Structure formats: structure tokens, C-alpha cells
Length: 129
Image 1 (tube, rainbow, N blue to C red):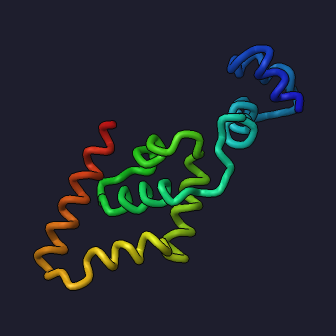
Image 2: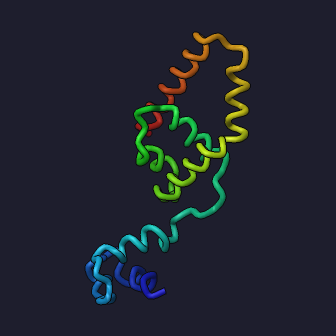
């Protein structure tokens, strides 16, 4: 594609690249198209169990912001992360939910609260990595 060739030639000089597309009214459209769809560093593969765990644990933190989670998943675009999070919330976390259910099975309310606090602390620490 023309846009990929121009990025290879001029780097991420979007003003220069946009000049090759005079029909585009939105000056940021080349930037958006490249960073959303064409960037070769985008990971479009299947979501791994490790990535699902990160999303699950970060989701337990009520102060979590999407950008904090996306920083932990290099190559995953925020819009794809958001869609995957919606899918997980809608269809369940599968194996992760089962493991978490097993961990808290038979625990008292106090033990579950302590476990959630530990997970919350872990989630907060991950933000600074």
C-alpha cells in the first residue's frame, strides 16, 4: 500500500505523508489509519491466557484506566483491547473465572475481602512497572 511505502520512506513525518493524499480532508487520517490498522507492530493474533489474566486482574481495580492496561500489553491497540474486554465481560472469562472461583471456594467473607485487597495491591503495583 502507498501509505506503508511512504512511512518507510519518510518515517512518521505525517505532514509530509499527508501531502501525498490531497483528497483526504482530515489531516490526521494517515496517522490514524497507520496506527490503527497498518502498523506492523500491531499484534492481531489470538489473545493469550496471560493477556486475559492481566485484563482480569486489572479489571478488579476500580481506578484502572484503559491506557494503564494497554501499556502492559505491547502490540495490542486500545480499541482491540476494549473490544476484547467487552467480549470477556459478556461471555465470561472461562478458565480464569473457574480458577478464581476455586481459589475463593470455601473461604469466609473476611478471607475473600483480604484476597481482593491483595489483588488490588498487586494491580496498583503493576501500574508502575
